[in-house]
Amino acid sequence: MNAQSCAALATGPRRDAARPARVRTALLLLCTTLACGGEAPAPPAAPMPSAAEPPDAGPPATPEETGRRLYARLECAGCHESAAVPGLIVTPLQDLDARYDEERLTAFLAAPPSPMPVFELSRDERRGLAAYLLSRFREP
Image 1 (cartoon, rainbow, N blue to C red):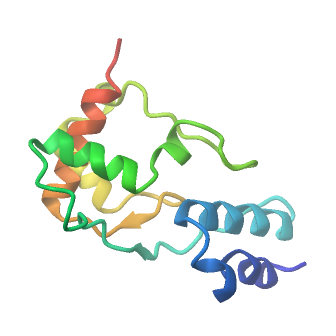
Image 2 (cartoon, helix red, strand yellow; image 1 turned 90 degrees about the vertical axis):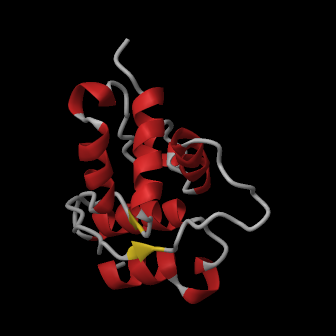
C-alpha cells in the first residue's frame, strides 16, 4: 500500500463524514508512516471547520468558559490527554503556564506546528482557549 492509497483510505469521501477530524488525521499519519517505511511526511496544514457556537448553546460567561467549550467541541483531549487512537502520540499539556503566557499561547494557536490541526478560530476564541488551557494545565 502506498501513501496515496493510505490517504484515500483515511480520508475517502465515503468514510470522511463519519469520522471525527482527529481520527481522520491519526489514520492518515499512521497509514502514511507505514507506507513511507516509518517516516511520516508532514500532513498538510489545512484549516479545520469553524468552531462557531451552535445557536442554542447560550453565551459563555467568561473567556475560560469559551475555551472550555472549544476544548470539548474540538476534541482536544483526544490528542492531549489519552491515546484514544492506537499509534497516536499524545502531547501532554501539563505546566503550560511555565512555557506560555496568554498572549504567546493565543498567537501559537493561530498557527500551530504540524501535526496539530489549524482551527479557524477568531482571536477571542483563541484567547479564551488559551485562558482555559493556562488555568487547567498549571504548574503544581
